Length: 201
Ligand code: ZN
Picture 1 (cartoon, protein in one colour):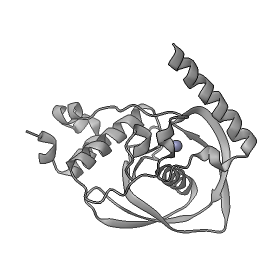
Picture 2 (picture 1 turned 180 degrees about the horizontal axis):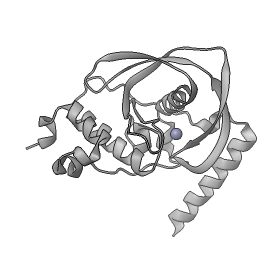
Picture 3 (picture 1 turned 90 degrees about the vertical axis):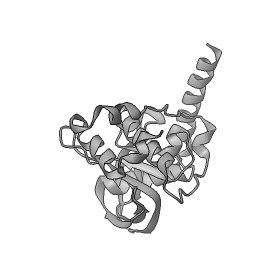
Picture 4 (picture 1 turned 45 degrees about the vertical axis):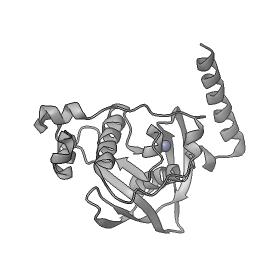
């Protein structure tokens, strides 16, 4: 029996917004997944469209939110937990504010502004490394929600940056690819060295 299939997707997302109000067994079904770290080659995969949203997709989205909140992070792409599907979870709510989980399924950038802005970015797959990245200041993104409904968002500010950072992940692109070769080589070497040391232990 698969209990999770009998709970409507919306109430399960509600459980993420209000963990105290969630029933015990919903909380138990969610699981943390391991976040893959640079230089894991899977970070360079181009993720596949989701297509039909089934219970496996719903389960993955719940796990992604749990993993993202636990990290803690504000955005996560499915490939960061090793699943090459075009799914992004995000929550840009302020630290002490109520949670605002949003899932973007099969997101596409429809248009970008000529105006650009600079944000300091970090990535759960490149821990404790932050650098300023310049990107279009505004983007229009089309995506589907967990019920398969289509939406379009005109994103500005942090949302615009975060959506571009996460959609890059779905195409095998990392934020360090937007830096100078010197900076990118330096951080890539550092993480390769750590991975080699851990493999030897
Ligand atoms: Zn990232």
